Length: 79
Image (tube, rainbow, N blue to C red; front, side):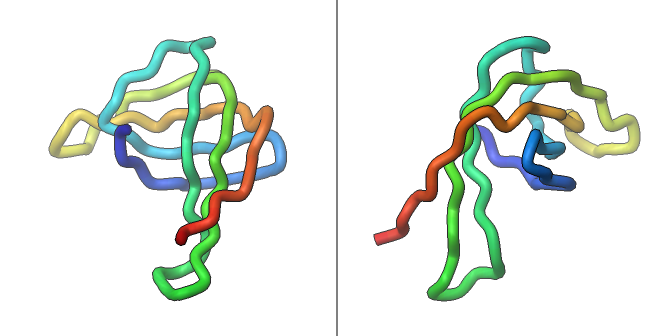
């Protein structure tokens, strides 16, 4: 699992940052945690494909903006 930060999300896809350089067109599984850290955190386990990516030039470490589709999702409970 690679950590990342969500920049934008819609019903059709997501834009996030990652240190991982993805394969365009490749399958992707990702988890989005919604809400602030509290007792009511909601997570979505998502399946999609990488549409495009761009290297972030001003990052101190290797970093990429990654755009991916949101084809399927399920809610994940934190027990």
